[in-house]
Image (cartoon, rainbow, N blue to C red; front, side, top):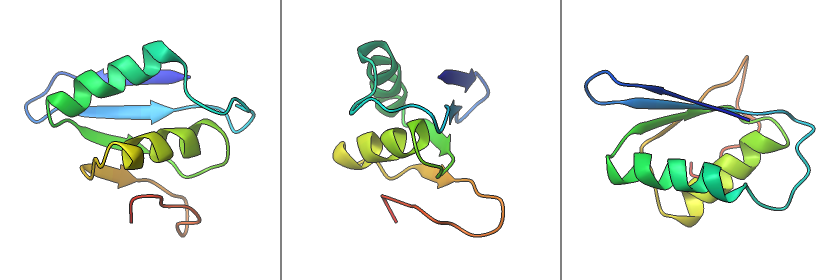
Length: 82
């Protein structure tokens, strides 16, 4: 999993991970980093593939966080937070 953050004004957090990620939930250090970013109202950018990307989206949705951009190649297949 990769968590890459921009320190620019407004802040963005790019969440990337493998579709091979099979755990039922994200690791605690990743959740902590995401929680910190949410507290700063950071824009989250995440893909919609199976695996880690879906776990990211599901976690953001569980927190009621809506400052999310779902990236995709052609059309969105999965967007947990609409």
